[in-house]
Length: 382
Image (cartoon, rainbow, N blue to C red; front, side, top):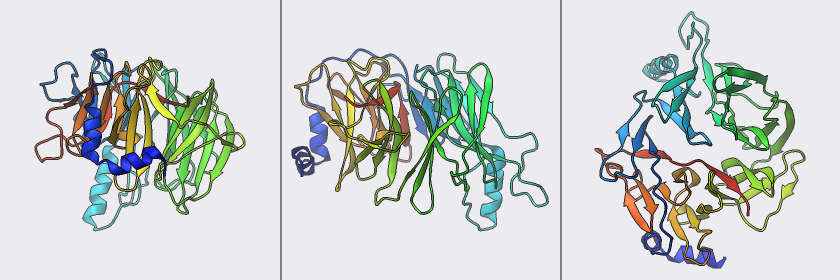
């Protein structure tokens, strides 16, 4: 057991909170950009400078999932369940059956400056699903992934019941610029593969029923398949599959439910050994940003730990939570996260102060927050 793991095993969650309140971090700039919360299928907006005002609801679909902030922090892309799928789900549930498939979905784009929402991908005009006497024509889609230069999105889509899917590239202001059939090695069931886009290309992956995960890697420019790799089953589940920057290069990296990382070369699957583990930092100003590292303890699960590059000798900041439950401000000098003081609550750590976002929490009359967006981030080693 390492010294750091021993320390975290000894201290409780309360001790971690006390550590967060230690006034050792330099004053953060006042990030004025709004914070976005994903709550029960919709987006809410919170002003980090007007702390007394609760979040304001900005969408009313009720079926939004996987919101993703653009690398320049100007747009949010997300998918939302289509009505044809909701109607089919009602019929399935009425018949007392269980639906073992992802709902058909549409892709939307929200522009932060104007509040305008644009539908990028819809269902076919004759969309139908599980209607007696009618052919199924609905489209299943993955969550959208941003290109590193924030001018395009990628997602996987396939017709309900089909075994072949395609990778769709959508250029903002242009439309669909590519629809690349996925390699047949990816097993398409009722759920779409996942997508991540980094400077190394586009990564598409899916875990089969046997626990093995298949990866396809595509060139981010022309969509050409450049490699396919197989990750055998493991006792641990893949929590995150991301692109990690190191020394001017980009590598695929897997974070397992055990807290362990695995980096590898997408071309030959050779493992990449590093002295440091991947950390998340601000996209805009990485040199002054907090660096978020992640680990796992048997008693509390995942935790994140923030290090300040401007004060390397200062105490670190830590709190329980997986990567999906913490993010950074646009400057990287403040942290927004979920879990304080209740599981569904949201909070800020700024200027050595812990600030709860009002109206959020796990009570019936509070907003139970499932995801939080503020500044764009990326993963790096070193």
